[in-house]
Amino acid sequence: MPKVLIVEDEEPVSLLLRYNLEAEGYEVEQAFRGDDAEIRLREVTPDLVLLDWMLPGLSGIELCRRLRARPETERVPIIMLTARGEESERVRGLGTGADDYIVKPFSVPEVVARIRAILRRAKPEVLSSVLALGDLELDRETHRVRRAGRELHLGPTEFKLLEFLMRSPGRVFSREQLLDGVWGHDVYVDERTVDVHVGRLRKVLNRTAKKDPIRTVRGAGYSFDDTFAKAG
Ligand code: CA
Image (cartoon, rainbow, N blue to C red):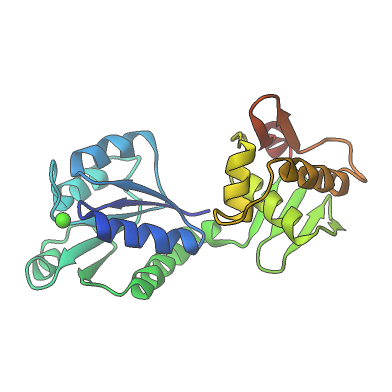
């Protein structure tokens, strides 16, 4: 999953971007102030930063300069968001180090397309449709799953469940979080349904292999075993 940090103080704009990027399969984090974003960027390095020009705390342009000056973030793709007429000319003229800029009000499909274009150039690996952990491979486009090269046949729910877990190896999800993430918020399903489907998923995954990639965490839920992820 490509990770995008949205730094934007206008909450509706930030939410609109978040909603649409998540629907496209991106993992999204938000910061509403420039100084908060700078602190966060010392802890995590996203695959791309969407950066508003006018921000409280620290301006987008200054944050962009600082990111370019640090070895850890000098290559992070940055798309600047600017208000029409005011800053766009200056962004172009000042050579901020941003990879691209988008003028507000923008069209969401355009933002999504620009993000994809930049990632394809800068980080093609994050757009791959294949999740590979240990000897397990899951292709999100063809919906094929292989273990040690052998094709496995999963039901649609088991496929979604596996994809969900494989996206965050090591992270423990409660049954409730799995229901939200795999079945969706609006569906009423008993939490025990999760156990049934995890059971079916395990049966297929482990039919011809010994090591179970799914970890049951007593009292907490399930996770994709990160030791399995590292083994391959
Ligand atoms: Ca702003």
